[in-house]
Every structure is written in C-alpha cells, then in structure tokens.
Length: 120
Image (cartoon, rainbow, N blue to C red; front, side, top):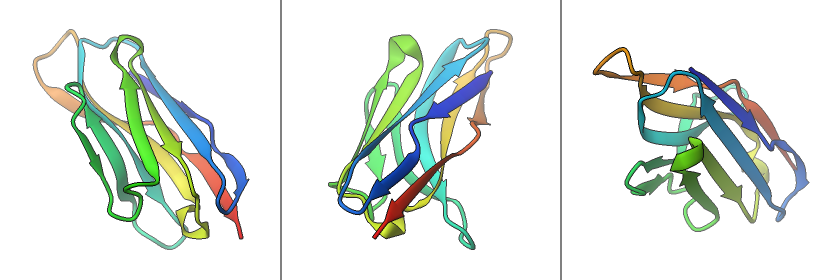
C-alpha cells in the first residue's frame, strides 16, 4: 500500500491550496483518511479526518477554513485549504487506515509529506 500526496507549495497569506492524496496497492477497504501536519520544532498534529461514511473531524485551528473530502471510488482524499495563515505552514502528511485483502485487521499507513509554505 502506498499513499501519494500532492498539491503543496508556496502561497501568500489569505490564499488557498488544495492537497490530494491517493492510496494505491492491495486495498480491501479504507475506514478513515486524513491529514496531519508537522511544523519545524513541533509535534505532528491532526488537521482533519474523514471516514468512509463521510464523518469529518477538524482541528479547531482549521475549522471553517479547511475542508476535507474524499472520493471513495478512487481511494483519494482532498484537503481544500482557504484563508491560509503563516501558522499553517508545515509538512502535511496523508494518513489512511486500511485493511488489505490478506487480513481482517486495519493498519495505519502514512504518505510522504508535502510542504506547504505560507508567506506573510
């Protein structure tokens, strides 16, 4: 299983970016996909998650500005980030909880991060 994220880049404060992350490989089902971020010198933190039933959860710091969505048929999760602030700058990591066809348990998978830089 691989998670491939894209969409990071440099944006001015107040601008928007859209991140995408596609899961590929031997996948039986995905229960949850989401985004986490890690700024320099800080711990990785949750940004937003979405379940296969479209239940969403957001960090307080991004609620109302970021929107997470998914395309279950494509095993892809998106993060629309609006009204970006300098404090949103971080490496954003895609996460998915996936069951492979060979097993009955779900496991946590991470993609390589994508860098978001916000200039003030």
